[in-house]
Length: 504
Image (cartoon, rainbow, N blue to C red):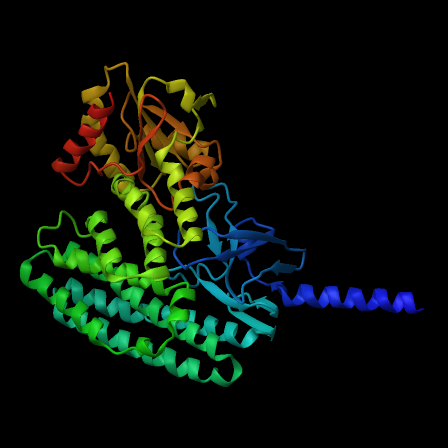
């Protein structure tokens, strides 16, 4: 009996330790989302930050016939951010994309993730109207976060009024309304969080406050550069710059939040990075486009203005966010970044990220109309110009039209090949190719054979939107994952052709 009692005590201790070093999640998804996306499992992933291109450790929770699931996530960290998603398995061009369980009811600029604490044991119920209710140990902070995410998207009707003012050319009134909505949301957020203060720890309270402020700021900061697209004259751009200055002057109590929280927050560094990018765009009177800025200048601002782990995290996030759209510029700053970053874990993440872009191109396999595979090795000794698109994508047709004269210039050369890759199912892909809107006669037109956004090459380079172009040299090495968009202007066409000429 004594022996049995010892075993029982040891087993109970082991179970208790496991619970303390993990997060236990169970629940039921009573929603058409799973059926809509033809998915039978919930994807739960640990995220380092709230950016859309953040990749984290993934756990799969199968759903039974009633939509019930059960999952235990081991963790050594006191606080972790979790995303709850479905993989879109429908036979469409979006196959392989991850959808948050709140979509399409709510879609935020940043990823919708939830802060959990080690030892939490939470039940999650997702109702038919996409509303979410958390119960159990640690549920208070999660219910607050659900309400906060609802708050972030609650201004859609007011966004319509702002757009109406923009369409009337009343930019001053539009930006003033933006600022007032910003103040209102900050006040609502702080009032809502205070109602939970007695139920959560001070550490969690500060983190959630900073997360909320950062997300509200990020939303409006991200929007400001788009005003330049609609209001190009100098006087209007002064109004936009003044809006930014006004926003900067609004006290959001960030100074009262601990530096530890700023390092832990999944949204603070994303907001800081967006702020520095917007500053660069607003200050450049000779900007090439509404969203142009120099990555070198951004890197220099980060290294001059920030220090320690915050600086290292911002550098890594800058590379993550712009490795595709500014691959050449990020490559140029890579060695400087390695020498600047002191945190070894962050440095290894940067090295792992950049390894995809400074070595051989991904060994792709795509298929033609006869389902014959075309591989990277098949085009050894040729420069490869690749264009990724999908049926119905207007920017994709613009790129295709701009690529036509470039293709005509080089089509008779034997040492270059132009390949288009459509992400639609084969039937829609064939229709789109036949339309002539997405390609030029004589190009090699390929498809993903039903994989869509789950195709290994698209996943490898983390393409989260199209069109995308790649240039690969004769040795099979990636030249760039972000050549200048030829549809933007003649200057970009010349730069695109220079990349080709340099590698022929």
